[in-house]
Length: 338
Ligand SMILES: [Zn+2]
Image 1 (cartoon, rainbow, N blue to C red):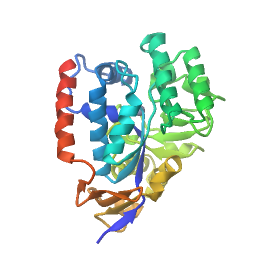
Image 2 (image 1 turned 180 degrees about the vertical axis):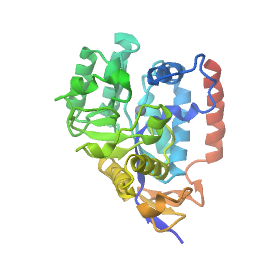
Image 3 (image 1 turned 180 degrees about the horizontal axis):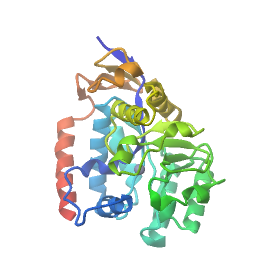
């Protein structure tokens, strides 16, 4: 017996983090959010080349499919392999059959030239017809000038901006700096301690926020639409829904799974094509109260754009074992650099 849904959407992902698992222990124990960035993610993204970006995207797309997720909103950083990186990700996802919307993470962490090249990668990709948003890291790594350019490119392209907001204490000025500058197309990731009202959709990442010990964003306090992301911890959106429900419940014993389920559904407003995708599941009924207490629900068959991309537990367009093997080779190269 099966039940079906439309394709699930991961509204905030970092496909480049798919190769991070098993990376060497950082030189120094990270004791706060800033140190987690410095010790883990900012060392990892510096070491990426385009071949690693390609196979991490394929692995991430494969794992999305294996979780019934047919559309990914990605946020990418590879400071030493910027040019063409968004196309590499888009092509890798297309090969697996998964929909993706890309963004390149503009930041001043690598000087004015790094910021310029990041902006240019967003501009190039969108101008060539790529699907996505203009990406920016977070206000605390953006100068006023660079932030102006990000806002301007978001307006000029009509794409809006995908940015991290108030993920940790370092970004406490983000609300003030973005006030009056965002619009409904913007994607605001995390917003853990955001007190300012900003236009845009809030991307809630409960698993990542717990992993970084940054606190609970408590998304019901916002008037904004709220969508669910993983922030790079895979693309298992039923798992993400369950984590979102449990965090909500932990803060309010009267909370029901319906709120977290509505955040999952917001993904379809951001990526409407996923509504035309069909996923049949190993469990029925597909109902928030059931799924909140039923781990391990798997897709049986997935059609994206009327094409069968997943059947009998395997992808149909690619060889899943080959992707895992090639990604493991790239992970070994990456970890050696760290
Ligand atoms: Zn993120």
